[in-house]
Image (cartoon, rainbow, N blue to C red; front, side):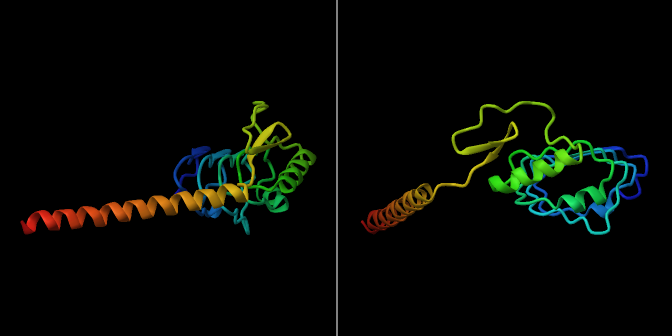
Length: 168
């Protein structure tokens, strides 16, 4: 869609429920690309070359890893790569941040998130969601099951009551 827009330099695609993205379709002149708050789980960067791109916002996606070598090969001019609130494990987040620092690529916009929530972990002044505790998932499942049984029971009772009222 954007390939023919040769003068396009800034593109905001945030909050669009994007699951998968083909970076090959973007113009080479693109300097800033915001993919904030989508559902990206993987960055497919094979045969991608966008030398002018300096900022790629990947915050609040569903990424579990980032292939740093592929990112730096595809975007050699990259200076800013915000990655907060993705689904990284703590060790993976640390690895990615170390590699970004080695290439002088900022992983945030300079905003200090020193107040992470209790279910989040902090790496290099940015927050990432922590894994959901197993006990929480079990309780959540049980509560949903009980609510389902109650709703089905109420529906059956209502249908029987209406049927009884219609008969007399």
